[in-house]
Every structure is written in C-alpha cells, then in structure tokens.
Length: 120
Image (cartoon, rainbow, N blue to C red; front, top):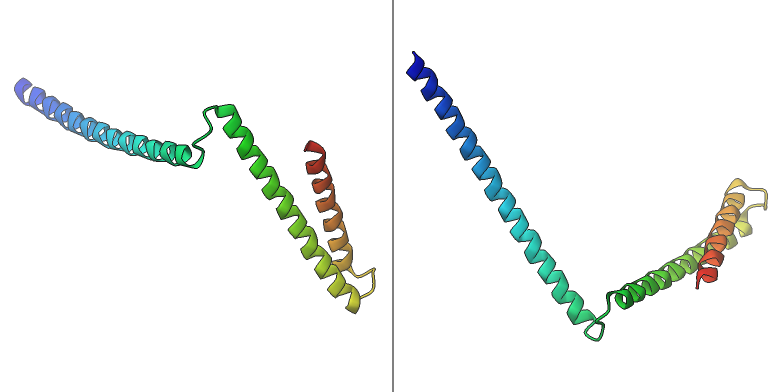
C-alpha cells in the first residue's frame, strides 16, 4: 500500500515536471521570437536612420514627425468641418443643431491646433 502511494506521487511529480518543462520550452520559444523581432526592428531603425548615433536625437526626430502629422491631421479635420458647415449653411439656418455642433467641433479643433503651434 505504501509503495502504491509512492508510485502515484512519483507519477504526479513526473507529469508536473513534464508540464513545467513544456511551459519552459514554450517560454524559451517566445523569448527567441521576441529577440528576433527586436533584432529586426533594430536593423530597420539602423537602416532608416544611418546617420543617427544618439538615441535622444532619434527620439527628437520621431517627436517632430509626430507633431507634423498631428498638425496635418488637425488641418485636414478643420477643412472637413468647414466643408460640412458650408454645405449645411446653404440649406439650414445658423440655429440648426448640426451647424451649432460643427461650429463647436471646429472651435475645439482650432484650440488644439493653437496649442500645438504654441509647443513648436
């Protein structure tokens, strides 16, 4: 009876060991995949910015690009709102709710644009 109990415990421990070993192998594979992705990203970064050796300079370039994209996006959104306002004003009175909503939206967008230009 004692021997049977010991065998069962041993089997359970072996199963647990195999399970842990499989989980470790899966984690090792995930780590290897992440490392290869990181290496690929580093290679892309070096190819994209060959003259940049300084991380701070690279970050500044990326920030500048992001700000330019935000600036362009806000200008495009304001232009869309202006087109919609122009179209609605031909049909409805200035008190029409959609016109008032678009005017508020335009004001919000212009405020964001002003904040962005102040940062620059």
